[in-house]
Amino acid sequence: MSQMHPQLPENALVMLIGASGAGKSTLASTWPASQVLSLDALRGTVSDDLGNQAATADAADVLKLILERRMARRLNTVVDATNVEEAVRVELVMTAKKYGVPTVAVVVSTPLSLCLQRQGPRPANRRVPDDVVRRQHEAMTFSH
Image (cartoon, rainbow, N blue to C red; front, side, top):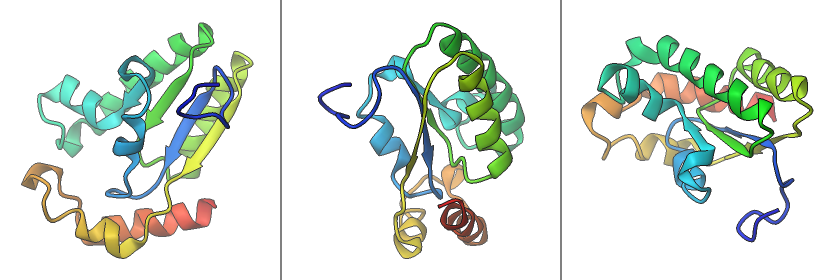
């Protein structure tokens, strides 16, 4: 367990769960960069554009591959993505279970109004439409 995250197991899969604008990436930045799998960053890696939603499936494939390799090594890994869909969470948990790695869900339950407000200052290609943020927030609340 680290000083920064004393309640978490030493080597675990940490799933951040929350709507766009909740503060997941800010929280993820408190871990060493090598431990964070950011769907946004991987979207940028595969398409040169962090906001290119059309590249999400490719970015998710890359994330799964890296996660598999990190879990095989039993390395602490933080998944920085909305993770609001149950099917996504199940797939992440099953990968960790396969290697006997504990899983921790960290729900970033920022109020919807703040998630929506945080979209404004983002660059146009990174702004998430209000209706999408609302759906993500509802799914995050349901996942609770």
